Length: 379
Image 1 (cartoon, one colour):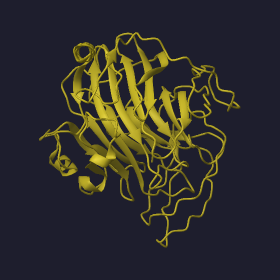
Image 2 (tube, one colour):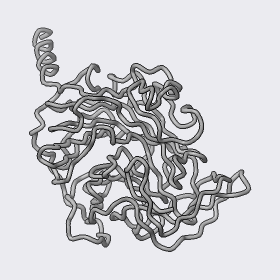
Image 3 (cartoon, rainbow, N blue to C red):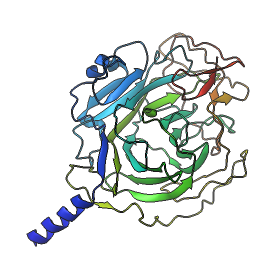
């Protein structure tokens, strides 16, 4: 029996993919190490330049409690925060992001970008703002949450997987649920597929390959969160958690334990997709005839069509709100700038309990280019 188990485990390990980039923070003791990074001193596993003016500990923190407990291949996870001054390079959007620093071919052939992500009930990402998460600068694939620009209503509780502006999968984003994700990106064939699971469950192919113009220079995948401003909706403190971050080629590792974890079975990337079901939720109008692929989830799925539009663009008229807080004043937020995507019907949630006194520049109609070329926005 023991010999059989050992043989099976050896086969699993033999099938595991080749790790091209390991971003699991196992070699870091503190986020303070990020402060030493610069373009002239490129130390550590990540480029760290998209953040506010304070030290790294104000926006990035490492701790074993910040990881998926099933991710035994990681010694710790990361908490990425958006605070009252998390503004980079004079922009009016909040950003805290890490970019893999590697010369490996993470932008060629077929590769798998792995990560697990979660939120807590405290400092949850606002459902009234659009968030771009774990995204490429061309936005050919990314996660999104919150109200999407141009959508009806004022809030949106969904976590989405988006391909070139089109929502291909979504689920209600509950607190303290670990969502395990792998983007299967085929840079040669021009496609991207979506693997997903929750908690300790193995990854499963959830959305088969979708055609896309996949391109990357190998230093434009942003692990973190970008939040767009919105008139009438002040920014509040927000946290998001990641663990199990790595990029591999070959056969995909399905175990959430990851390479080097307690178990790491892998299967060929040609595995069949998990059966999916069409959502029965009421559709929301969108601007394109390109339909998203319906899939099943643990909550009602609303998958809407929308067209790929450069992020971000101007938004509807401002909506006024009033939020009480311990601080006597609130931030003046500019008109939102975002890529419109389909949204679920409005869901009312309690208003945030924290506001900030820092003012943010108002948007105008003059477009400018972001210095790291990740999006066009308006100042």
